[in-house]
Length: 146
Image (cartoon, rainbow, N blue to C red; front, side, top):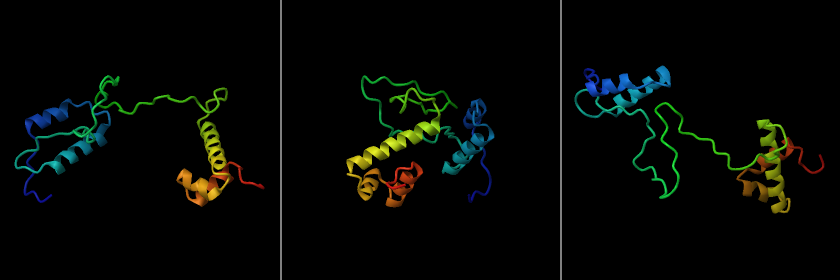
């Protein structure tokens, strides 16, 4: 980094590092320390520790009146699974791969129908190349004539 000597961490930064629960264990510690050192552009000991590199002052504020979920505790995943649609077949066993395959088949059949079974137009509408569409149709045994 071009430093003649390592300035270390300030007492404030050291305390922050010691108080953190480190749910990501040593890899998280390494990432936090590396990020702090690489971002430090001032003289003296590193004084700023950023545990979540994705925190941004530009993140949109919640809509007024909208229910907002509480912020995740440090170390918890901010990802929340929201069930907004029923499975493709509610009576079928909840086998993920089978449900995804069924959904893909339904999506392909609907898109083909909407585009009068024109495979090039269907591929374009789905954001696929022609070959990708053909592969998906072949995988689901949906090609005409076999």
